[in-house]
Image (cartoon, rainbow, N blue to C red; front, side):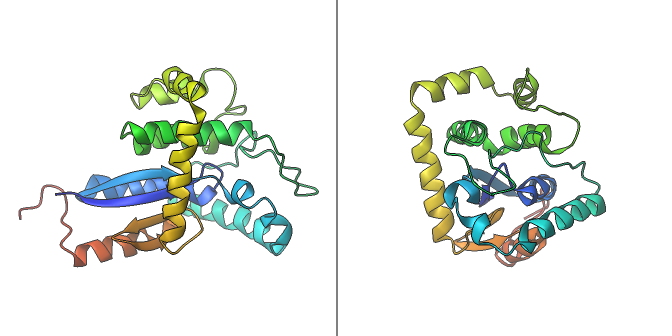
Length: 220
């Protein structure tokens, strides 16, 4: 039986995007089933966060995420446009957030269908791999979703009909994320134990191996 792991993920987090490569490798190598559970980024959950954070914080994240991507050979560029509408001079976060609301609700809809990891692995590179400027325009997202076997128009229509349903899924994800013992993303959770960061996948695998995790195709 596959080992179940939750992955709490934000579309604005560079480390969430960078974690997808290691997640794909883990799922392909080990008998693990990952449920990606989308949450809103800190800028939405705690709009004052960036105003109260050390000014070095954002600069370091930019520096570090770029070098992680370079080391790991992952195509990378910060999204254009930013999925969060925020004045980067004043750090004020806009009340209306059309991009991140749509992305997170779409992933929640895919979660309902049991396809959130495949969906996000297809969609996130459209924002982050640097090949597209204006990821929110045209059919970029629709084509990526189609490659993952997901009908984007159908998901958009379902969300438009009952947005509160998907907000409840996101709220449940955020509650369980907080209950896991960490607040940041990406956070992997196995048997209630949190593993924060794209650089903790090896530690997560080590923990699961201690519980009997096997490589796919290995004899029992």
